[in-house]
Length: 176
Image (cartoon, rainbow, N blue to C red; front, side, top):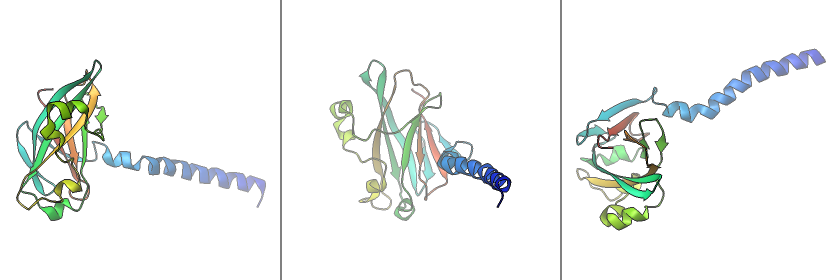
């Protein structure tokens, strides 16, 4: 093969491979993007059928942490649950503010939550384990805590259940 032909073959391969590499790397982000997922927006205090249960935001509280950060404690529940549907996926919970910033739940319960709301600190997080001991038709109350900047406003709790539902459940917190 001539040197010229090798050059053009490599250039063509690069032109094809580079965009494919970007798409493969960004595939998860594309799937999670808001314009691809159907959102179910739930009004404050209302329950909504989603992923094998009736989901409801019970309460969200803004707790002090530092001068520039706050802890948001979110309590929600799933009732009238269909255990077969919930076993098909894994729950993912995120908090999103009005600027579009996303906050993942903290791994360990914040000390302020354990101090002010010890009963909530013992609640399960949204996962398959939360429904392990549940009985069909009963309610499972869960809690997640997030660390957000003090100026974060217009907060929404976003619950996804890939495998059980293609939709995203969004609870708008009107008192943020």
